[in-house]
Image (cartoon, rainbow, N blue to C red; front, side, top):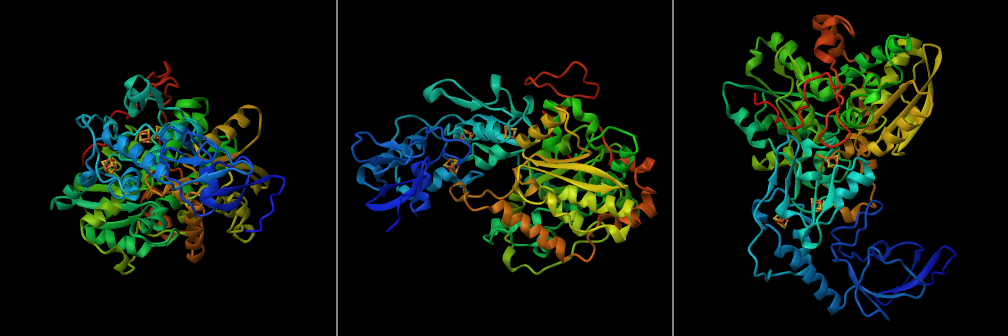
Length: 605
Ligand code: SF4
Ligand code: SF4
Ligand code: SF4
């Protein structure tokens, strides 16, 4: 091929082809870069390579035993064979062994379409599973409202543990036992709802099998839709309009806003509202809260509170910063509260017959909806939360041909949104939206730029300075709780910030634990960036791009709330937080609020 080895690269032979690879690269990555997909069920580039699934075995000339490619580094002159009869036999045997002790129920499994184990068995030509043992007994952990664990489908790949520990720096999962008895689970055999898990669902998105899945509420939502006595309102989070299409084979970053509204109507929802509207409202409340705190009324820095995974992370690991959290409920909860009060009054509906369903990017929103604080006038704000994946399943169950749907509009008034509400779905979006409004309010419309690009992009931590009320304001943006730790530790060490945005998931909601599962082997493709770019395109397409200029938001203040931070707004749209134990299962003695909702399901409507 004529490539010359440079100082930081090596030359080796892959299946008889001469290739170059950067020093330190492992054989899986080197082979993928040259068009050979060595299978693996445990390796996660940049996060984990425990070499425990033994599916990536390759033959290396001069070495007797087959070697796991995920931990074998490239070396000068290495001769690697990835597709010999011995390699094929060994890989097939490894997958067969995994299947032999696996609770196999593919036709009814929640991961039937995206299961890597199933796909790999098929790809390798495993046609029978020879086993003298009975299938393992089913053992489900489903005592929390967000994630279900099915231990009989766990292949002990340890991806979940690695993501939780290395990517999120939470450490809610650990391996216990040895060999075939190893179990990867919360400590002391507890349920995820009983330990310091932030319910983000990142473990679900990397699990190759159906051992981890969101807790489904599809049947409950069908029941509400089938009940003639119920009026069922749905809201969709900003990111759903740029991710749902993937579940129907559309390219990453396809905007499907109009088809999404059409699909929801065909499913039978009585009103189709947009959480983007509530995001605009959140920004108006939060921008005013920030300006108040700048005047000395409250703690600085103000830290955003719209990501429930981040809020729970703060409650567990940094309770000393709970007073810094914005008291604003998340847009999901604001919408729920307004549907059951403002909208019910306006339409003359009995709020007890209203059911609010939220289509959300993450499992943490299920936890949030079940929190005891998320109740307004005695009613739960949101009754059921479905992830993007669950909505896609409902659309398929109904036989709706998604790609053929026409573009339809969301319903007024709670379906009207500005570009500011749209960009809430990506890291930096909340900050940019808040700055758009805060600067316009204090510096005047003429001086306020709409776009604030310093906080865009997927860098783990972004910092910038902006003038608000004639003074320099230092801001920071972090996504993924590992990066949240970096910012909070800087803060503890004396760094000065006035406003911080934190989202629990890498990339923000576009990378949420409830989004369509992206194939792990294709992770080199930056799917989060594509999804974020789609949100910015949507923002650009909007006539109104500042939250406080949303006509429906203005109207709701005129007709119902009065003004930002009014008594009514505080009662319906703001909340409190609960310090929780760092040690799994232990609550801090000073906890003043009622026990958390960890072990509860969302209340039925
Ligand atoms: S996890 Fe995969 S292999 Fe196991 S039952 Fe589900 S689809 Fe089948
Ligand atoms: S939901 Fe998040 S915090 Fe909980 S176990 Fe999974 S990755 Fe860890
Ligand atoms: S739960 Fe899933 S990700 Fe975790 S070890 Fe089991 S199979 Fe792997």
